Length: 287
Ligand SMILES: Nc1ncnc2c1ncn2[C@@H]1O[C@H](COP(=O)(O)OP(=O)(O)O)[C@@H](O)[C@H]1O
Ligand SMILES: [Mg+2]
Image (tube, rainbow, N blue to C red):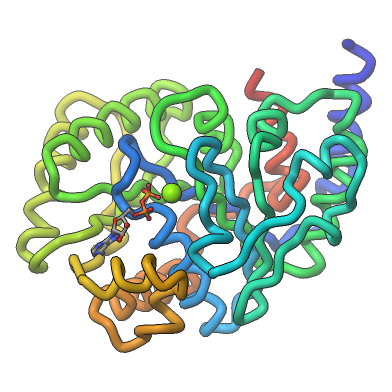
């Protein structure tokens, strides 16, 4: 077991000095149903419009539905990759604008708790993503589970989605609290979804920011907000993403604005070992 772990660490750090350009962004929330999947899918579409090559990892164990949001249906999942039955190229699901989806399924938990004997193969496969993508966006499940936490700690940047609802705020605060305990001073980027007005967004952020400043170390950053928009629900029902079906909608315009920020700035100073190897290395160290 020890030998395997060190062999693995070697493998992970072998290309440390090479420029790994793929960033990993985890989208998360304290509470389910706040709009993570809608946001992730449309952020991917908006980033693709800006010329970024995107892969989405559907990492929600309970409600994996990135494929459904695109009107697609996954044939294989990361489970097939972990078992060695399929390669990464075989499980990728192609969506519009060059976006590729990695369906997670029950393999997600296994990935975050990687079986060490499978790891060489997984690294080799996921490493190939760096040739096809600039950005890996993970739609994590909600909450404080071990799997979600491992993904968050391994990502380069974390975007937390909340809504102005009091329960979303308290659950969001709970998630921040455990993240700060584990990740220290990492800045967490907050998106406020389903706001009525800009004032509503700013007031919601202020409520969260006040308790964070009072009780937690580090800070949170208001990345942006998305208006409550009936066209979001309609696009979900029609299984056609907002960014394709209703690109002029107020919600999608907000997401385009956020995508501009995500593409234009490095949310986080690049870490030495970035990319897939850095990500897996950190995932490994989190045990
Ligand atoms: N900005 C928005 N305006 C209106 N409805 C929204 C918005 N964002 C999400 N929703 C609705 O909330 C529901 C849950 O969204 P979803 O993305 O599945 O949440 P999560 O992934 O966090 O569980 C969807 O049915 C969607 O219609
Ligand atoms: Mg979801």
